[in-house]
Each structure stands twice: as structure tokens, then as C-alpha cells.
Image (tube, rainbow, N blue to C red; front, side, top):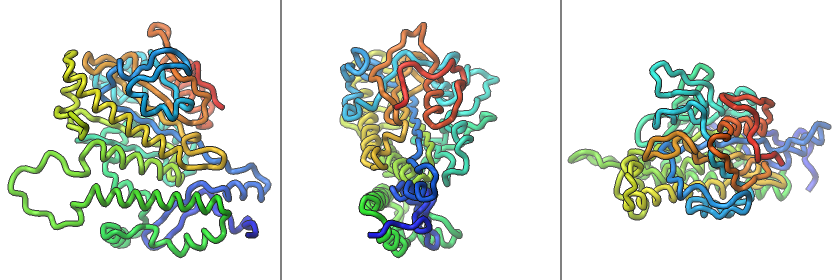
Length: 430
């Protein structure tokens, strides 16, 4: 096959379009080929960030590993993440100075703004929004602010004025934002088609066949993998929202406590799969996910109580055992997200190698409502990971030092964020 001419090569912002549909392309080798043909530097895959907070803290005895450095012994929660041991750093001893107030600290996880429970509190800019200012215009969506919660649209994202950016909590609506464009009539028609089992790819089939014929073998395989992920996402959304395609019966009593779209782990998995598609297609490079399990009774073996009540376990063994099952499931879902990112090839690396996944909480011990010794880990992103980095509480740097390192990895040259004193020790870029 003859190589593509510069005019034929897709650009990083290329889309397959049809009436009411816009399917952004994933990163392809042909993108870097365009850079060489034009005499410019190769268009390497971009760096990205996903920041996840679980609001109820974690049982520290099951999260923090023992040992030190890369030779740590994994804790029960880290066992599902063992395939990524070499691309994972667990931090012990970190906190945001002055961020207190128990549950109130959730809104300061990515801002580090002190005393969130005070009456005159005003939040500050979040990590993702600061980063978005530096990469504005390079993606369709500057950031994605997502929420998995039984109620409300609280998120981790705040503007420079400290104003909350509401989180998107409906996976189907997020999918439509990512793949459907056009007039309200066109969008409604496409939604009806999707509910009957069609795919957005059906509407761009002619363009995708033309593109496929003009790509090298590796890119064709990569494109087919991406399309398959889109199809699988649509099928999962259909299964999760099957009630939308049926006539709704007249209720004879109070509504049930949950519907398929309101189950915690179903939502977490759907959001994880959409995060992968959003990053792979360069729809965005910055994602936050606010996870509040408090008012759920998650579908996990042996779990019969709301998570919030379990966190106030009072050291009762049966409550701790039940809470442990919930938190183990959260890490199993996190492992699925990392595996999904790692399955996407981008040149000689994977999407996980180019994506920093921050996971943590602004509560160290929910039973005591403490906001110190926070459970924090960072996976992927092109760092020389250190395994376990443990700080003594009295001499520990601010959590915001880790955020400075994240900003630098995103290409943003700064030594300051919130209460930071510089980049975090023990974490180097590759």
C-alpha cells in the first residue's frame, strides 16, 4: 500500500460525521506521520489525567501495604492492582494542611482549600480546571466532571471563583454528549435508533470504510478495536437502561429503591468505560469522578447495609467485614479501568502509560471523621513509580505536592498549587 499523502492523513481532531453524529477518531500512527511529512515534530499521544475520589475514606488496615518501596507486600485492596505494580505508587502520610471538617473536606480534595466546614469558606480552583486553562482548545471538551452518587450532582471540579461545576451522573447522557451532534430533531432521531439496537457507527459506515482503506495495518487494527469498544459501550447502556425501551407500567405503590441505572457498581463500570472512550478519542484529556457510596446498599456479596452506616462501624467486626466487601469491589472496578486503559495501544506505549489515574479520599478514617493520613495512589502516566512512598505524619509534604508533579507531567511548568512546597518526593518522570 502506498503511504498516505499529507493531505490524506487524518489529524488529531479528525471525526467521522453524519447527520446528528460525530465520532472522534482515536490516536493513530498516521497522526505522527503527518508531523514528519510537514517537517514538524511527531505528534505523540498527549498526556491525560483521571482523578477519582471516594468520599467515605477507606479502611486503612486493608488499603495501606506493608514493607517499603517496590518490595511492598500488597494489602487486600491492592491485590486486584498487582498486574500494574510497576506502574503504581501508593502514598502514606499525606494530607491537605488545614483541610478538616470530616465529610465537608470532600469538596477540597482537588483544591486543597482550607477549613471547608467554616461558615465563610470559599473554595478555590481545582486541579483539573487549572490544567484545563493551559490546554484549552485542544479537545472538544476541556474537562469531564462525573459523579456516581445516589443523589445530587456534587463533583470535584471548581472554577477559579470556587464555583462548583456540577457533575454528570447519567452515562447515557454522557454518551450522547460524546457522539451525537446536530439539531434537536436529529439528536432525537438518533437516540430512537440507538434504543432499537443501532450504533452510531452505522451512520458513519461509509466514511469509516474509506478511512480504513487508506490506513496502515496497525492503524486499521487500532481503529477496529476502538469501534468495538464503542459498540460494547452501546450494548452495556442498552442493558442498563432496558426500561427505557418498554412501556412503563402504572405504579401500584412507592417506587423501588433502585433502578438499573442507579446501582453503584453498574454506574461505576459504565463511567469507567466512557472515560476510556473519552480519553482514547481525545474528546478530553482531563476527567474527574466523584464517588459517593454513602446512601447505597451496593450489590456486593454479603452487603445488606448502607455504606454510610457501615463506615460508623464502632470497631464491630461484622460491620467492618461488610464494609471491606464494598471497598474491595471498588478496587476491583478500579482494576478494570486500568486494564481497559492498558489495552489501548498508542505507538510503543498504552493509554495507561499516557494517563495519570489518581485515586484517593479526603477522609482518612470515616469512623472517626479524620482528614489526615489520606489513602492515595497514582497509577500510570509515565512516571518511574516507587511502589510505596511512606511519609512520617509530622514531616509529610502536602498532598498538593503530588498535584504539582501531575501538572508538570501534563506539560504545565509550575512549582505551586494550593499549599504545595514543590513537586512530590519519590516520584520521577520517565
